[in-house]
Image (tube, rainbow, N blue to C red; front, side):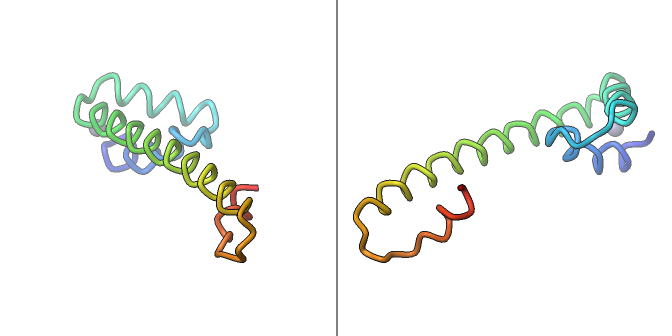
Length: 80
Ligand SMILES: [Zn+2]
């Protein structure tokens, strides 16, 4: 596996969408490639930020929904 292949698969690895054999290949590459290891750490951090941002949006929507003012609650439907 080269760096280009590994970086394409990093996203899937973080999302838990890789099968075991591909995950092992990516992890084996990262073990020998500091550049891709850093890339993985950066993606992972970004992923966690997005996940916590989604949680905040869901909580805000719950608050708006309680008001019942007919505002845009499309994000609530996505979260549900
Ligand atoms: Zn690499």
